[in-house]
Length: 263
Ligand code: T3D
Image (cartoon, rainbow, N blue to C red; front, side, top):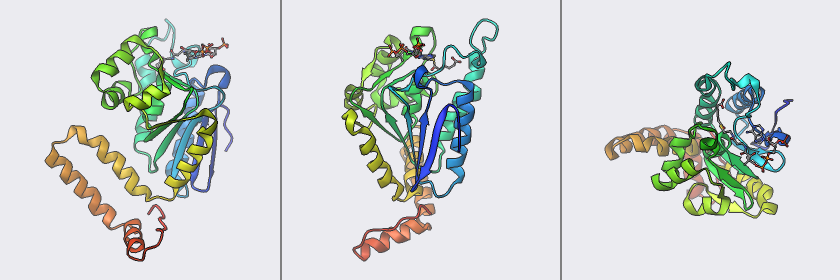
């Protein structure tokens, strides 16, 4: 599959999507959004894919919205930024959150604005030690969108979320891990190999169970404990009828490694 603003490849169960506008720090433009939709549709439909890794080309992960892209309704003649958010960023995040495979953000450099939100929308965020997270929005008179106001307080609590959002200071990767914003930080030189191993591991795991785990975790804040227990029971019922549960249980009894298929 050939794209102009992203790179996309799938091998051995691992799909790798790389934002590829390095001279613009991989900021989003309209064409990139269209290509992302196509790539994510492939991940959703290709059953051989068991995990998605998102990263950025060059020195950044993603600097958010391309502030110079005229097609994205910036400027006084087309001021409906809300429409851009509805048309591009909202579906991007909803698609990622409902994806049928686990997702990993490999944050190789700065993740700013909607780029930070993109990373936080992934199930696991692993950053290189020199990476950082920047809620750039208040610097240009906007709010943390692309799910930023949803992800931030859930991960780091209201006090830190407000500090990050209002003051728009860069949060270094190590501090982000310490605060629970992201899963892990590793040395820059080890990032690609580390995430490669992590992705290979996820690609052999019971995919449906991983995705139902994501869905259950995200549903929890809107449920009472009793509702959540019922919600969990529904997923357990479904998973109990799946191949991977039968295989996992059999492998345990037979004292061997399971061969999960994602089904
Ligand atoms: O339509 C809508 O707006 C709705 C959606 C909004 C969602 C959002 O994401 S709003 C937030 C948008 N993002 C930002 O405000 C971040 C802007 N960028 C920066 O603050 C800085 O570039 C960084 C802190 C991310 C990195 O700084 P630094 O010093 O490492 O790099 P730099 O020199 O600023 O940038 C390098 C190049 O990338 C530069 O181009 P040049 O001068 O070499 O030709 C710079 O203009 C370009 N670049 C960086 N970010 C963006 C960008 N170009 C377009 N859009 C960007 N967001």
